[in-house]
Length: 257
Ligand SMILES: Nc1ncnc2c1ncn2[C@@H]1O[C@H](COP(=O)(O)OP(=O)(O)OP(=O)(O)O)[C@@H](O)[C@H]1O
Image (cartoon, rainbow, N blue to C red):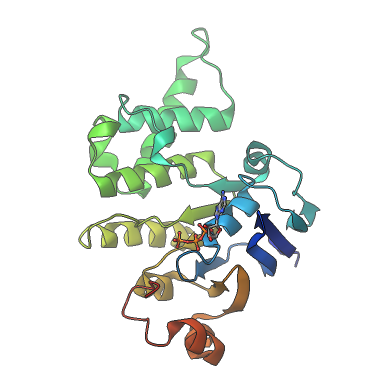
């Protein structure tokens, strides 16, 4: 079967520095892949090359066999590649529900129309509430977004991404900046999205226990290069990965020392 995403020698240089260096990767539909690597390895840059925030300087990136290298991030989202919103895209003075409603509306490309049947708007609210349930945020539906706790804001980001209803979900460190107590709730949210089985998920994370718990496969980036790609046990037992990276570093969190 055609991979949903594939890259061919995907590269980008900033000045003379190759932040992503000839990466060949592919993933099948409905697969859960995590990207790991030390700080500065190129994980976020690789994400940006797939989502269209950055344009590659060499190589190519394909979605369902079609080259998307020349498409904007909006065009890629429309095709089915959804990248988690940064909280800066949230309207801070609107409620959680209003924010998710707007994201659902943007998906449906609905302009506000006072003459449109009110039942249609009711459906949008219903969809938004269902998404809030999925991210375990329904009890905060009527809270102002800016007043949410940090972990709840990250849940709202995931809700906004789900509202776009793209086939691929790209999550860049959904637990970044969270306290340890907040992490299990996000893990539950991602697990429940995965268990529905209808999404392809690409995750950048540093928390190794979370990665091992969730991933069908793991790819390791190191100095912009793809060091390894395989099942969690293959990666944990890979001597190159161990020597270059995991050896001595793994204590539940992957950080460069
Ligand atoms: N816009 C940019 N201009 C210049 N250099 C950049 C730019 N974006 C990233 N880099 C460089 O590319 C390299 C990879 O950075 P990137 O943020 O992708 O790493 P990362 O693996 O996501 O790191 P972290 O785990 O710390 O988030 C780094 O050396 C970084 O300084």
